Length: 393
Image 1: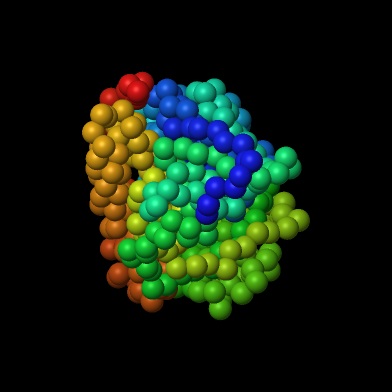
Image 2 (image 1 turned 90 degrees about the vertical axis):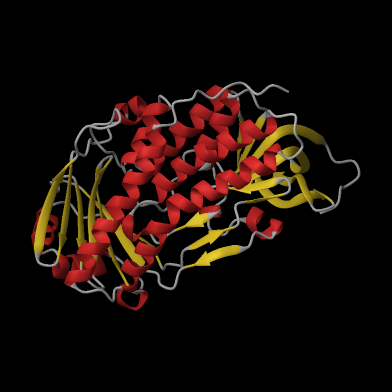
């Protein structure tokens, strides 16, 4: 997109498009390093969004390292100290053991998590604008140099040394930058979920049967109960669908739901195949679902977002703080390589799980592979003890 005469110009080090679970912490970390950061979010502040809610250990480690976990706890988010897996005719109860400074998991509502992340970004010095839509990218030749943003005041051209797309699976930044899809999943699930009250749980509860995968996730003001399967099995979703799938997959949970307070409405996701996109190019980078999306059946998306926010931020800080003209590109290449190394094992396992074509023998191996892949990322994140240093301009 070319420059429009008479348009106001503002310069930043980084413009982040999207202020959700990937964009806000990326901005926070960049601002903590002394960079001039602008965050543009089209939604109003504090609005809800589709989510699996569950934070795995890697995500909780990140929140603890960043000093934000006390805010999650103070918001009344239930501590999860047990995970229950039901599959192949057996029920497996796993205690959450203290490790890496974390003794519980949490699943905050997005109306809790997102505002905490945004507030932290602002406190660090980032400028956050809600109700601002990005209409296109600015370029100088092949290099992205900024964005065209629109809000109630009109259209503005905003320039930056780097534009970060944290704008979800239908990312405008990815589309406008021409980010290539490196890996595309073969299968996907549809999901319907709602929030029950007065339903006791042991913690995270996951049940896996072909076309009848369910979960119960304790969150703020209730329990998120979901039903997942092939799109033709879930259809338009809704309360009747959730009850039907839960009754088939986990009759004991179905009984608890009958004794609880059912939601007045539900939310649904018709699904789309997962993908791994090219993570960067001249003047741009992607983080969160904009660059990497995996089927929600394993509820790992928020953990991916918080993980990759720091991997990207550290690369940007190192790259922009170097006197070498190639430093940023090299750092972003390393970011992409680390993201892919951590993501691909779980991406492939999730795709197989989303096929709903496995049997009782295979599902045991798939669950074990999920555990192994998540352990590798926790080890990496827990080892990120180097402080974020101020960038030397």
